[in-house]
Picture 1: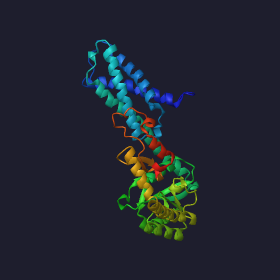
Picture 2: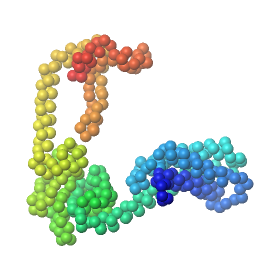
Picture 3: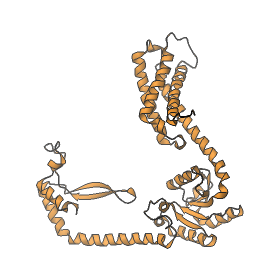
Picture 4: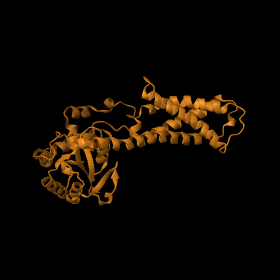
Length: 367
């Protein structure tokens, strides 16, 4: 790459050049795979227009700002969308600006779209494959300086962690294998990391690794402590006692559970599920008691709402709860429905009645 030239500029020029080449290839393929005498400059004009229009579309869609080494399905979707815009604008330009555009076959835009998408996607996937292929060699050179670990459960979070650990050198971890409860995954690989078997076979797996001179020091579970079943925890605890394994929970390490790093596998980490169970019990007991005590208030508020705005008495409002899961919050209605013709164009403030505003100030609508 030339000194001082930003990487995004190089990517933008690459994508624009691919668009120009794709026009030439589409022109050739649409004419049956061989050149015929062309009496106009349609080919030259089209290739140049493809270059300029594609450069503008790639810049507008931000295609040049994406990281090639992390190419995913979202990137390929963005390529298809950008190519669609580029081909549509190019077809419009050719129809309006190029003389005797009949020299360009009618199927050329469709062919060019496929060629452009394939070429842009292939270059990115090839770059990612080359980067992934070179990482095991670099990782092997630094393997002696890393702590060998096992991964428990190769779900979505486990796959992301394995890829991140293999893509980032010098972080002190060497993943030697994966243990998963699903026996169908035995013998498969996840980013070149083998799935060694089920958690019930953990003792056999550790003995087999020891015979090859590999002694894992940690087992990293990609589940929170509360999500691990009792038999699985018993197998892990047995391996910890016999082989001195240190148990860590990836959600805790990433602060996804709100627990501090290092709390997993300790008495403090095991106390968290008990606290959650106690809190749930307290919520149910206190909430149920409050419902019984406030039942007359509920009836009074419901009667007020019925007389003021009518049915339905409640409306459902989505909120984000624990783990960012969507939960339903039910409140008493304080506004007239927006579907009524008389209030359809009114703002929320005008739709709220005097009684509704009083219920809001008193927080009675949130009971």
